Image 1 (tube, rainbow, N blue to C red):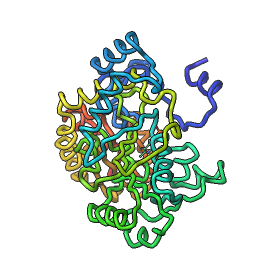
Image 2 (tube, rainbow, N blue to C red):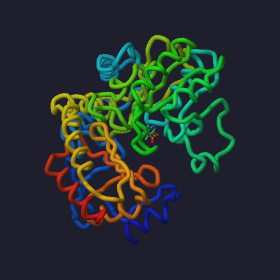
Image 3 (cartoon, protein in one colour):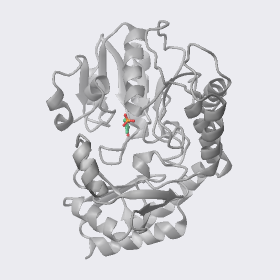
Image 4 (cartoon, protein in one colour):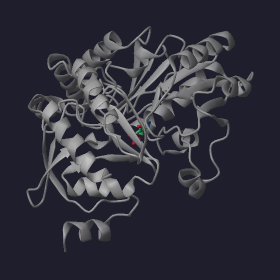
Length: 383
Ligand SMILES: *Cc1c(COP(=O)(O)O)cnc(C)c1O
């Protein structure tokens, strides 16, 4: 059987698949089983910010696994301690405590629970087109009947309001509102960038009413938008949810919390959360981001990329949006066929909704590689 047939036969089939078998990666390049090379503008939806095959992270994982690979959090561990301190030092505002988990959904799941425990209230307000993961709690916050319907009923207490519309949000707030959960740039929702003014008003209404603000930066974290955390450009949250690129590609999630978050001991824990192997990977990955200046690169290359995309004159394009190396090209028609054609030209991109081509390259992408991508986009979109 081919690799495709093996996966189709023995896996449950919950992923919509593209017909390539990827076997290797280096920097911003991916290689398929036939040795064909691709420029990666997906980065595993924002996991691979430091690029593929980073040697420093590989070495850190190797050495930590040999030293002590796992250490349940009932014991103290020096690597976990150092990462917690490092994240607190990097975090904006007063986010000085961390809870470690293993994925983005788990981070949001934890944040929802922490909000309820800390406020004694049960309602969470999230946004239409928002994406927060697919475990039961996170799923209730995620927008989209196609995701929710097969698994009904949803967790009660979750409400959705239009994104970036303060009047509608204000109308939804009540005495039982525990938290407001938002992305500052909606990723799955189509690379939609919120207004700073909107987020400032959200902060105010939270402060006035004792509501906690949870910002989901699972996709926008670690340099993606030209600052280490995207929220630095918008608002200061009470909880910041992280995962995807946190540990350089090793599974890890985290919730950074300020001192308004109070959760009883033992009430929420995780077996793998804060395991030293993932912590070592995260420390090494953050080190790579700092030493290689990837946040600054994301900002300058992102500005260049956005300008080049906006210079494409094509009647099929409705709008080009971007912040750092998180870019979206909204078409006036379905984007799926163009994603396929781009793959054939050796460029891997993402969809966001039906009409948006989403570009999330590793932050180590070069200007030359960006030029190649822009050329491929021009050819693919035609006239
Ligand atoms: C990917 C993503 C999640 C879910 O992360 P998983 O690790 O797949 O559970 C949550 N929120 C945002 C913004 C994401 O992009």
